[in-house]
Length: 130
Image (cartoon, rainbow, N blue to C red; front, side, top):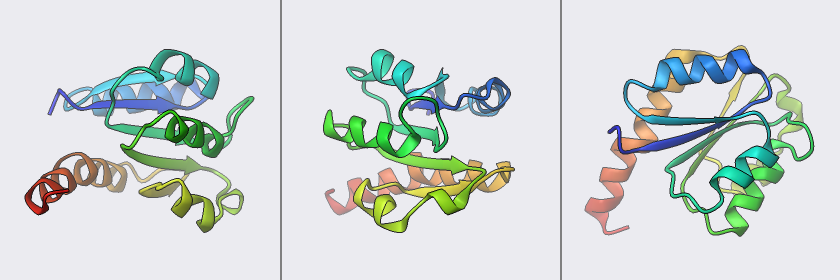
């Protein structure tokens, strides 16, 4: 599974480091401190999952995911936030955001979600011809 690539976008360095330490054993993890850095570094790169905080400087996580979708990104997306009231279900559906987690994060549940999105779900879609 080390071939799977995850882009983690959060302006909190400790969260980026935590994600990197937890996920690097199974995935290639690419951190970015804000939407601008993520879009500049990864807009032409094939990756499998975006994990983004909703509250970012400049563009928020939803706007950033929307930009990636406009650029053709069809992969999975997970949104995280300490402020769940900022997230509307319409936006989640419209942008095909797979999961939403509230900070402080339940790292066990997050890991299960990532494993599901990057292994089980992908295998199931291949079997179904998707």
